[in-house]
View 1 (spheres, rainbow, N blue to C red):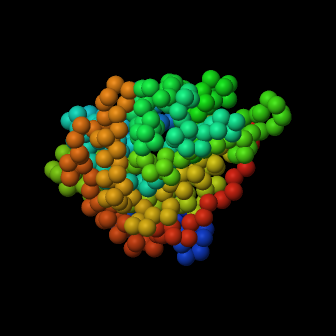
View 2 (tube, one colour; view 1 turned 90 degrees about the vertical axis):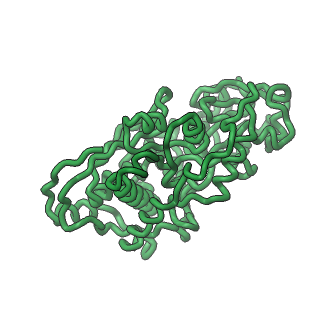
Length: 384
């Protein structure tokens, strides 16, 4: 994070923030700037994504595009993720200023010595599913018995193990666990009985595929879906993580964190109220996924964020404790758990997000989305 002189006039800041589209009446996010009349300095910030460019991260791209970061005197660079990139380690190594990561994975890194802190829990609910064709008869984790169950690994599998444990099944003996690629090809080919999927990505992939028996796209009626959130074993996922050392020792960084979280939540509020605009923004960033897929994705991601009873980004103690408990008790095939002990009290803080929500409250931004309703999305073949 570095600072550079900025000579932007107040009108320039206002123009950036006024680019947002207001929808939904009084619940629409305000696009007024909370920055000073002119930014005496602009702080450069690097954000590490946990995957490739897609609408899973639309709120951050929108915050850049709509000028919400600029209105907070921030110049934010968004770094794409990938299979070999561990966001929280990038943060711990000082390569970036903030990172997005699922809570169990980040807590495992923290237990290993990474001084990182959850400062905003953007996804309030888990979006992980297990998807199967109807003829497999899989409607609950108990039905996984004797079946080939796909999982991605890389720390994404622990909700599956938690569901198996809760159902009284031994992952090592009662099911066959199959390493799955980050797509639905194995399910569609019949190589696995139930595939791991995110509501906002892989599930859409099967609905975009063509049924060879009919020559038409599959529909939801062709599949059964097990939701780990509904099964009570959902773990907290996408959160904004910051450096614990810098939060404790650098007042400027702490102030930047507050502004960054505020502008990010404003971006998500914008995407809640205008999902089509956010899908278009992500497509314009060069995502390899198609336009209808991106619209589906932002619509499903919105369901994981909104409504947010305590305000978007607030970390719910019960959800946190559930995630930590599952991470300590759920064993993989080697008998290991994500965590060996409960995370310490400093692993998360609501101080930053509380201050960020106060900024947005002053701008009349709806940070709870109590009237949120998802839209209907028609997926085209291949997500085009």
